[in-house]
Length: 257
Image (cartoon, rainbow, N blue to C red; front, side):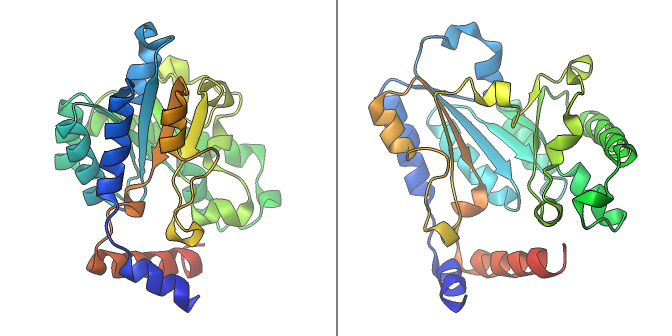
């Protein structure tokens, strides 16, 4: 436990590593773009594409720094913001440059926390439907405050881990197309379209890559469509920020369940 905390506090920035991944993809002839851009255009069929997705769980500043790297390299990506990390000014800047900026929802977790629900067995169909209606309200609020969105992404909250049910369960059997929403990112029909799906990991796993090979290997292998999911807090390390992140992790684990 102590060793893990020390590693978290002393970890240095990995943003140069992130830049090198994109540079390698460009050198290998990949188109590097957002989820929305890739989904909406048949142009990418049969081409090598690296699709960049960021789940902005805690670090809005880190998200902006990753955007700056991407913009400098002439590529685009997708950013999903929780209400906790919403930062209107930087989000507007990112969106105005043609990046996708949308909602990272945690609606079921919030609903369960408010209702004091701690076990999956406590949930009824009525609860699921009420949570779904709450999500529709969140989408409406996001679009009124910012802009029209076409994809959404669920966040994995401590409450979800406690009850063993992800937030996107409330979308089962629902048709979001009437709202102009193409998909939720964990929809299996969407994930099945990628040749390779990779997610970063925290220092707990020694920066291991989850679900697939490291992105450098997938790129060098020439995999046709690679979806790379990153979380800015795993890249934008700084001593004072690291301490803050340890405090957030502690709060999330012991008090936000």
